[in-house]
Length: 210
Image (cartoon, rainbow, N blue to C red; front, side, top):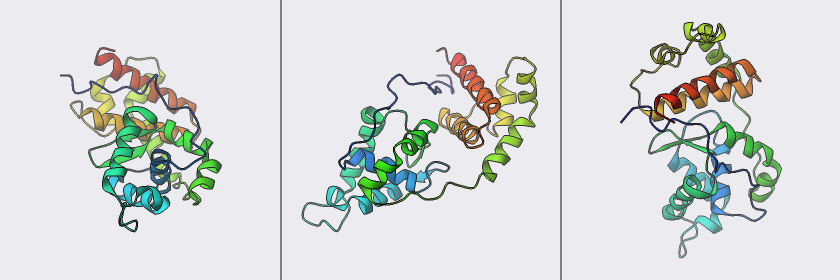
């Protein structure tokens, strides 16, 4: 199977509905990931589970020991988020790491007042933009970026150099690199960089055959 199979940023089932006005395990998981800095970095699922329990202990504690987090409840919430309820909002970097997609960050920020009111904590400050600026400079200094601006075809190996991975990297690595670049474009309001990321995504999708 092509190592790029599955690399696609589009999803017709992308979550757009607002969060519930009442507490629920899925919304609190997304909010917890955001509070832990998941807009700009990978976060271990166990840290998200603990933060979710901190925000909603009555929902995520044991029945007989409400002071203890119930792993099964939080794990089940994550499963439903990725499969049905909040599709497209969370990026799976690995079995144990998650971060919000660009769409996920936008969803949280759009409904931030409701989430903060429901779960009682203000968001952590956004990460400093210097990390995004460094990524933008690196990508824009690459030969493949210059070629793309000039109208040249993209090349897989040149893209791998620009995104600091290899042509044979697993799809999770490519997807993570694209999410980082898309987030940088969003934070820096750089439409040209966003266009390059979208072009790269389309190129990778075409390589895997749709």
